[in-house]
Image (cartoon, rainbow, N blue to C red; front, side, top):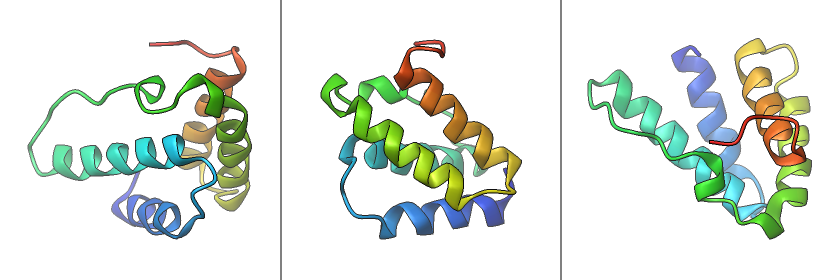
Length: 95
C-alpha cells in the first residue's frame, strides 16, 4: 500500500459514522501500526477479532463491503476489505 493509499484509508475511516466501532477501531490501529512500521518501529499488530466483538460481525461485514466499494479500483485496499469480509463471514482464516 502506498503512502497515498494509507492516507486515504486514514482519512476515510476517521470520517465514517461509528456504526461499526470495533472495525473502525481496528482499522485505526492497523493504520497507526503501518505508519510506525514504516518509520522503523515494528511491533505485532493484533488481529481484527481482538477489537471486534462477535456481536459486531454483521455490521462489520456491511461496513467492510461499503469500504470495499468506496475504494473500488484500489487492489491493495480491496484485498484488505475482501479479507475482512471473508474473516467475519466464516470463509477466511481466523488468527
